Length: 325
Image 1 (tube, rainbow, N blue to C red):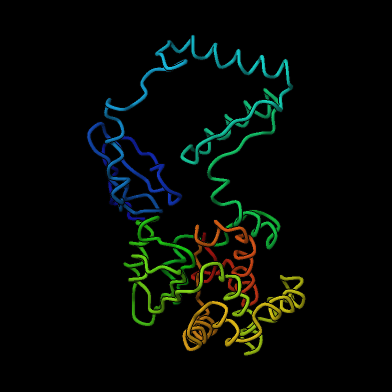
Image 2 (cartoon, rainbow, N blue to C red):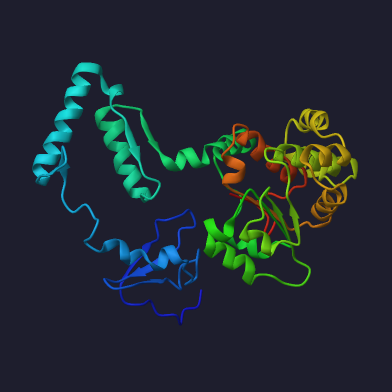
């Protein structure tokens, strides 16, 4: 980090709009990017740069309301606490549930969970963030034993092959997309896997417009192809993985060949072969997947199919060679 960069006047905080977590410097009149923040390094998308516009009085809820009428804070707190107390007395702690926002900060989650689980005694605490990432969480617990993401933002810039699966980063995570664009260099390739041609596909050297729902087939086929072409890391598998033989058998049943994969995914065989060859030949590969993978009935299996390919090649937790979600 450049020690010569001086922090701007204002309050240093975090943009709440998406999962990138951009640092911002907020004043009453404008919001600017925090040049010292590792996520965005001063960049902001249109959502972050317009944060201050949400603070105008028009349309904001400035007072508590009960039954559609403005009330004082003591009245509102008394009404809520009374309702919770009555529910617990009549039906038990489990009758109370908390639904939180994904835009809260970690400290806010901590306090809410302490109130719900520690004080009231209800286990029913959920957020929209769990809904959007539950498939990835389940897949990572299945693969690694815990919900962990073994990559970081810098990997997106270090990778020689960047695979974007089910991700329209240009719209959903504009600042990260800007970092991907800025890191374009000779020899670097980008593969976009998405049935639609989105703005993100403009970055692609290869766009695989596969049949919706066939991501698992594509990545199971990749695993089989890697093993057939001796492109797996057998020492890494022996030291760090279990169940590889069984996983390979299952993958072969789903996607035994490039021809089968191409037919099931409605892709050209040459494009599938090209993707598989690039993946095998590029040690520094990052696969970034998003809601196009997660938000599916088989989302967990899709995530695991991606993770398995990285485990089979030892591309986990290495600079420019890992997974990101």
